Each structure stands twice: as C-alpha cells, then as structure tokens.
Image 1 (cartoon, protein in one colour):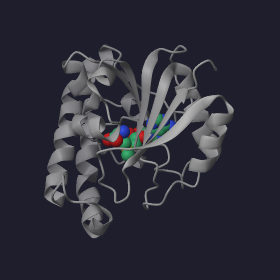
Image 2 (tube, protein in one colour):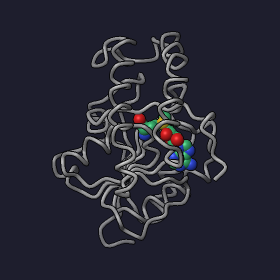
Image 3 (tube, protein in one colour):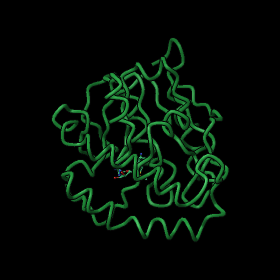
Image 4 (cartoon, rainbow, N blue to C red):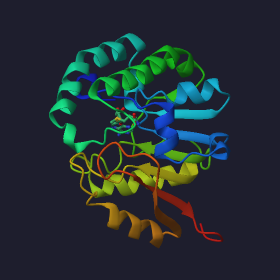
Length: 231
Ligand SMILES: C[S@@+](CC[C@H](N)C(=O)[O-])C[C@H]1O[C@@H](n2cnc3c(N)ncnc32)[C@H](O)[C@@H]1O
C-alpha cells in the first residue's frame, strides 16, 4: 500500500460524538457496525469495551501505535492553530473552546491508542482503503463514514464516492454518512448525484437532521437503505 503517514493529520472524534452524529440508538449500538475511515477515533474502543460489535477500517492501521502516536503529537499544534484561526466556522456550544476541543480529541485518540494493538489482534482495526472493502456481503448491519466521504469532495472524485458507497452497501444493510458538507462548509457538490444514483439502484437515500453540529451548518447525515422488496 502506497499510503504514507506524513500525508495524514490524525484527528479522532469521541464515542459520544459518533452517537450524536449518527443518531445511534441503543438498538443501533447492538448492531454489527463498520466504521469506514475511523482513523484514531475513540468510537471502536469505547463500544467494544461496552460489549458492542464494531470493526474500524482505515489506511493508517498499517502503522503501529508508536508511529500513530508520534504523528498525532507532531501534527497536534498545527491543527489547533488552524482551528483557532477559523474559530468562526464552528459552533462552540457543546465543545466550548479551542482548549476544550483539544482535550476532547486527545482523550478520544488516547482511548484509541490504548486499544489499538489489542483491537488489531482481535480483528477490530482493519487496514485498507476505500473504495474496496475486504469483507463478505452483508457482514455488517450498519456502515458509517464520519468525516471522510463528502468532507473531502475537493480531493476525491464523484466516481470514488459512488464506488465507495456501493461497496459499503455491499457489506452492510444500511449506510450513514456524516457530514454532507465539504471542508470549507459548503454542501458537497456530489450530494445530488450520489442520491440520484443510489435511488436508481433501488435504495432510499434520505437526509436526516441530528443533534450534533460543530462545523457550522453541519447537522445532517445521509441515510441509505434498501427499499423493501428491492435489491
Ligand atoms: C478526518 S479523519 C476522520 C476520522 C474519524 N472518522 C473521525 O470522525 O474522527 C479521515 C480519515 O479517513 C481516512 N482515510 C483516508 N483515505 C481513506 C480511504 N481511501 N479509505 C478509508 N479511509 C481513508 C484517514 O486515514 C483518516 O483517518
């Protein structure tokens, strides 16, 4: 795999943020969940320790804990500086300050780092890159993409988005994507095309408002499911 860590800025969200971003109910948390592009998020560590079933998939998992920890600490100051410069682009109600954000993210990434080696052995952290997934059809009930698809629309093609979602729908019965905005806070230019393509294939694709907004205006997820009787 030609993936190098120096291109990655590891920045992981917490279990509670995942729950709010994806509107995960108690029932959802008992499902077999796949997190695509989970990176150093704390979701897998927390949910697995609570007895849940979750696999995270990300190219950074080819590296070891020490390498990822070093990259987190090498990039941390630059990320915080960037957010400080662009503070107006974020809502500071739940996360109340840049310092609070730094603590929340570091705590999520620390729980990931503490869990990573064990989780890798248990098959809960799988290294690889969308648009391909190394899983059997319908291995999961729910596949999630947090801050990867749509967010990087200016770096990833429409074709990549369509293939990645198709692949997520092959391995899971339902897909949720958050946010539907790009890095500069605009609605992804691929959203309409993706929704039209997915509906053509016999799935429902709906935007749902959620109780999470940090990037201003970013409070909607895309939910994709098969329409009953089709697929
Ligand atoms: C902004 S981070 C989001 C991390 C986590 N989902 C969260 O919300 O905290 C984006 C993640 O996408 C991963 N990524 C990059 N290219 C990918 C690919 N082709 N397939 C899957 N994940 C990828 C990166 O390694 C990184 O961990």
